[in-house]
Length: 397
Ligand SMILES: Nc1ncnc2c1ncn2[C@@H]1O[C@H](COP(=O)(O)OP(=O)(O)OP(=O)(O)O)[C@@H](O)[C@H]1O
Ligand SMILES: [Mg+2]
Image (cartoon, rainbow, N blue to C red):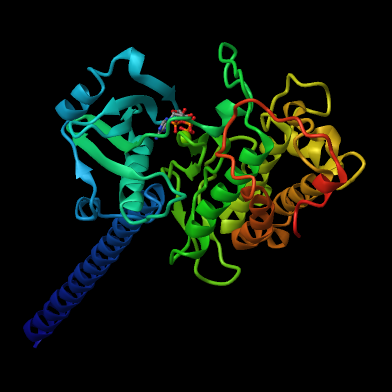
């Protein structure tokens, strides 16, 4: 009897031990499984973040391969080396954030501009990819055409149509302490450049779906051909915009000091209206012949937009801001009209800024008024006009 009791008690103990061991094993399994899920979530989140960062850098454009099928030529480094006489110093036409820009002649005799990437790293690579992908898809007479590219091992080069008169800023003010400008652009040419650049942005914002936000619109990214016709260049920072009304895309703030819209600088919220602000700054450069930011100017004049804004809305003072090189070439009526467009474009409130289509509509009649005199754009000798009543009546809006 006693033996049976002892046996039962041992059996119970074994049972308890088994149950305890089983619960420990199940709990361990549960803990291990939860840990596995936690790690898996973390890894997938990290991968997603990385993918988003990559896309952000690329402005949402992937798939470089597509570009080759879109009529872009793929060059070898050797071909571009010989097109520029071995990247000779004498062929350098400029230097920007991407690297040196060379003048070159291709085998078929075409003149091109070749940008050689000197900035190793992700930013440069992303800009290269966006430029190729985007310019392979967009075509407008107001956008600089990409002829092709080279992506040989460590070498990244972009090949563009050649713009004989370089960047707009070089014709408005000296761009470095050593550079000088002998002749500035005349009024009529400035008006036409303003219109052509506006048409370039209008195409990006309103004729492409989803809209493309340039994000680095500035005078050095408006290039001039041999007849001073303008094309918008440099899409390395471009971004696809939101298709929703009032929508925006959130991005890291990139761009150039003096041109960045206040809401974009503060919040990183990017819309096509951010480009409209930058366009307004370029209009101010065209009117005044001044750099957007130059703290060496007298107190109060350092930031172009702050200095110009109160004068732009005052018809008695607006002439004070005008580039002295333009004296006698414009009518007050024209200046007031262009000043009004500039004021609208640089409104601090993005919603109050016009669409680029509105800007184009406002500039067309001003430029048309000059067409009858049909002078090819130039920065040649200025024809000083006395402001007669006829001049004041010229613009038809
Ligand atoms: N297609 C081109 N034809 C002729 N000259 C060009 C061409 N592209 C660029 N350049 C010249 O090279 C200069 C530098 O251009 P680049 O776009 O590299 O720099 P940036 O516009 O000054 O600055 P960022 O790198 O910020 O755009 C221009 O100002 C212009 O004079
Ligand atoms: Mg540029």
